[in-house]
Length: 205
Image (cartoon, rainbow, N blue to C red; front, side, top):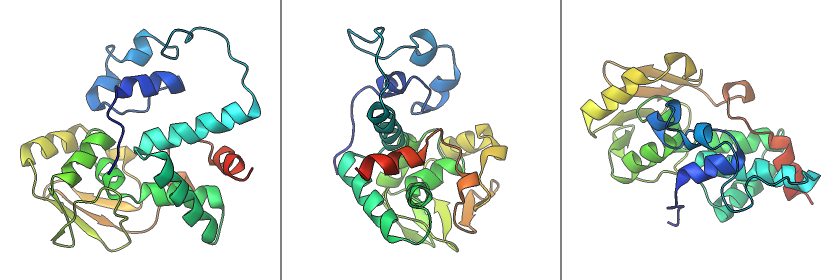
């Protein structure tokens, strides 16, 4: 599957805020957003007129980059969200949140979503005792997540994770390195800095 392989710190600089794509580095003074808080490129420091379309596009790009999905897949998620009952924007975020790689990051088994994606792709994650190596796999209530990967590395990530940041729809047992999906994510459980309404407006044009 296609994925972005360029310098991820440029993505954070482009959005003018930390997207936490590099794990621990994002929390240090080495973070490029701290050192160069302006968009990359020759015209990064120039002024730009922020039209309505520009703001909508930036919100969409931000969501794509946070969750690590490309345009076609993101559009498919949007189409699926429109077919569900409820608010389209919230449905879209709910679909993105229940991706397996995001769930691994949320429960603290990885320091970033790209690291969680790698754990899944390498076959280190089990769902209900069965190996799942598809990062886009969507977890559902009742699923039990376990790992067969580098236990020392995962324990280190779990110990450094912010326990208060684990959403209410996930239940974690750090001792046994297992987690259970106890429900579906609500909007108040999703703390990413994205205005989903803007994304819906962009795709509705």
